[in-house]
Image (cartoon, rainbow, N blue to C red; front, side, top):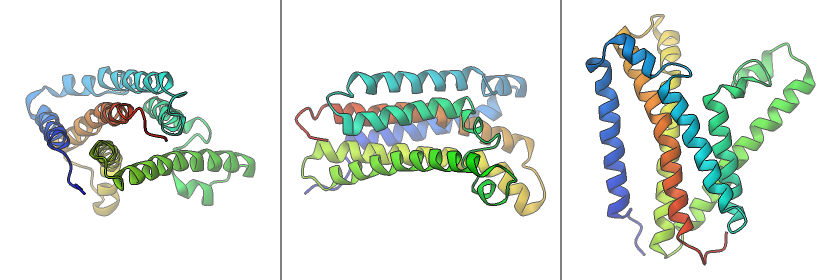
Length: 218
């Protein structure tokens, strides 16, 4: 059984690396004002990310009746991605929904913490469900199934990288007592926002690969 990613997948990884290299060069090629405007909150890149997530949700909706086990959680994940770009994860608690310390130390009503905790568990359950589907596909002998599993794992890796970049500034400050140098801070912002724009496209690629398997039972 072939366990290695296909040449097409390796090409996708290479393309993503080239895209990241272009993003990394922008802080040294663009004036600061232009860069900040490009990657600002509610700026062009963030708005494009929201549109990409909503288009992905629509793509999933069009196929949800045929592949509900995959497309329904994927659609919900896409909607959550759009909501995160609009900072709606703060709407329930007033702080980041994923800040675990808030559940233990914040002086907030127990009911609010329960609602936030259930919401957080549903989000985690969606991601685990999709990971389970990818693991099941990877164990099959059909190379096409393995292909979409590899692409989904690539999307999750991009998501992890974006989240890590989002925390870089705070982590460096906590560890050293200093903020990142301005140019390094701009590099982190460009790479983070740029990868967030690429993320729904990588997810869409995985789902389009899954769509080709019309006879598969999800």
